[in-house]
Length: 124
Ligand SMILES: [Zn+2]
Image 1 (cartoon, rainbow, N blue to C red):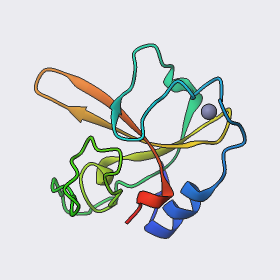
Image 2 (cartoon, helix red, strand yellow):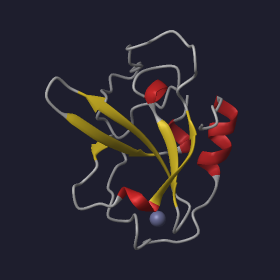
Image 3 (cartoon, protein in one colour):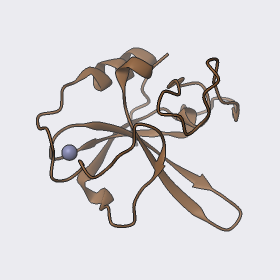
Image 4 (cartoon, rainbow, N blue to C red):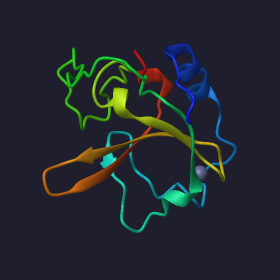
């Protein structure tokens, strides 16, 4: 079972410095905003290290966009009580230690694996 992370734990994780620039495993990901994980990308290099899904918390599908951003914006705030962060896991690249958020979007006829780089400056 993944550790449930609170905001300060998330900030600490987000502020850790990756060990490499141009990491061969994950530098192909361009995901300052939420992106669908490219089919060519192997998720095996990402290791889950915690989750923002809090057991027993009330469901919340609202998004937080006080500055007029939308879910795809590269500068959308990371507000952990709001969708989709409240359904996200935190993972790290096993090669360089860079941190990412991941969640799975379940549409009517599809499943979409989404990923976003964990930028500490956007955590509200
Ligand atoms: Zn990496």
